[in-house]
Image (cartoon, rainbow, N blue to C red; front, side, top):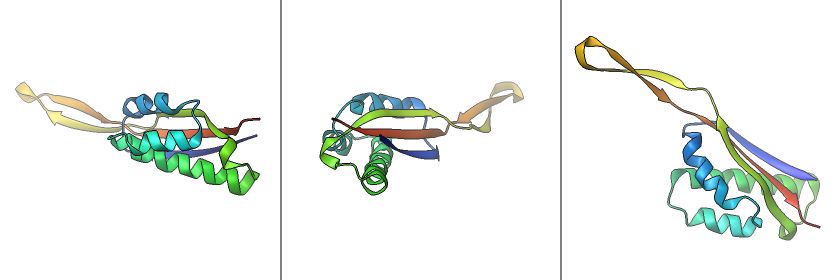
Length: 111
């Protein structure tokens, strides 16, 4: 049995969030929350909200025990890019990709 939560179209690069996802994969949920709470990055705040949502889904929808939950998967996939243009030398334009992410967390119960 697993419970999941996904935040879509978050305005942060998935590369920045994946570094934080690697830190919490396989950890107990309370340990993962404490890691995220003391990580000074914007992605940690977003990932903390998604993890809290996955924990709430596990408790309310599947009647899982919070003490036995661990982070089975944590990922940040590419979302759509917002394309913007920046002026460069000799009248040219330079593309800027403002990236978005789909951030997901899956929690499972240890036996």
